[in-house]
Length: 187
Image (cartoon, rainbow, N blue to C red):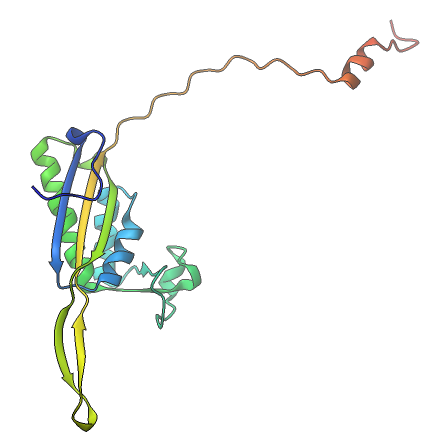
């Protein structure tokens, strides 16, 4: 069995999915995972569909060098409206998410109450190729693949808050003095 970076507290209420050495950009996967972490699964899948059809943008928060501003970045409150539509990475991440949902259904969990509890991307070893440069030199031409792991957790219904007893009113020195003071003319 493969080790995950985090082990859930209640394994019966969680489902996992992971992919190793995926030929998608690590930086794109990191931004997608960062944005979808904490979302409900159905919301995340719908959002990823919107990204694939260019109706929504993935906000880029960490790796922002040279990334242009998009008007759609305002919808997700992206800092500086910076975002992109990483189609290939989104499709791979969406497949992993659907696999995690299928694993949850196999365990007997309710797919509508699943939340993305843990989403992480790590750099995989680069795929090394070469490119030919001027004056007979050779340069590196490496891809930056990724390892992705997702853990879904089934949320339970919240417990109603117990009614609190009325808090006693704190009487200050000034209030106590006002109560001792008797106004003339009032009966």
